[in-house]
Length: 128
Image (tube, rainbow, N blue to C red; front, side, top):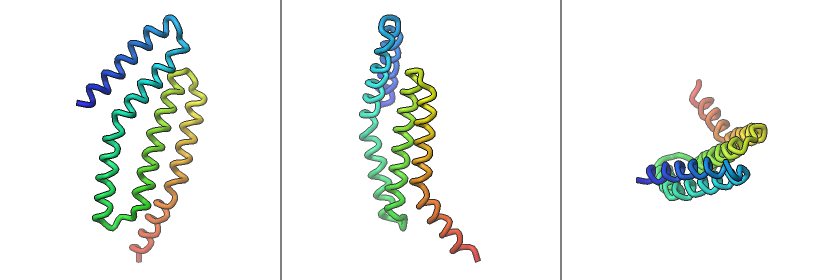
């Protein structure tokens, strides 16, 4: 079970951070980054499987592939932004974390404009 491995990495990183924080607190951010990277690499093949499934489903339906690509990119941006925000908060930089969060949200909104426009066009076609 992958979830046990992910939880194990998280708990081991937490224990290492607690121990290292007593002697060299500046190194705790590196432990957090390494643990996050390990977890990210562990779930990458699962993410690839999800993308393959969504792609095969979109090929079978009338869904525009551009929209699927946009949704996958938006989801990736959300994950990466949340990861960066968590790292910033872990290092005590909440001001930077809020700016990164805001930047990610603005990018997500700007990328979703074509989807929103297409949805509105479809609604206008349906309405008499």
